[in-house]
Length: 177
Image (tube, rainbow, N blue to C red; front, side):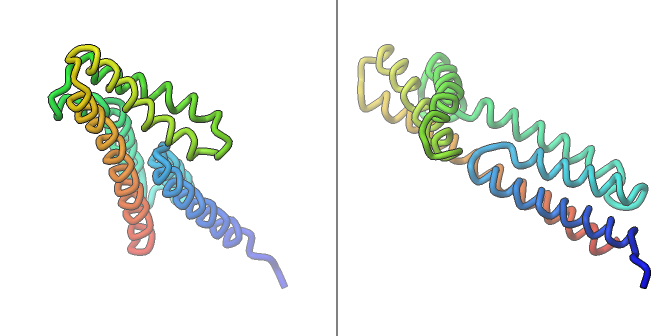
């Protein structure tokens, strides 16, 4: 009996792409860039099936979506702060606090969750400190800083939704084509 190596290779590529999509979903749930992992899976499948679906158009569109998600994430804290009446300085502080918190949260001995907690706490803390020092009102500062946290959580839901949508587009496209 002869081994069908091309079929084994195809199965391996589809399995790897499926695992990458699953990893992308998990990463998105943890506020990491899972969309990029789904883009990598799409690129792998596009390379294997060239020129059939997903071709070049789907990875190109997915790339634009990934960039868009990163832009939204970068400014989420700022937008959340300003929507609640905070200053631009508090918005910038929320963005910096999120980045610092993510790095410092990495020292919490619970992998990934520590960074997520740090990002949210850092966004809140720096936005609160800046807004409190500006207005001298604790309630207002807490209200504004909560906007940064809600925006960060909204980005997590956005990332998960887009990661799932990208995965579904890839899967359905492969089944249909």
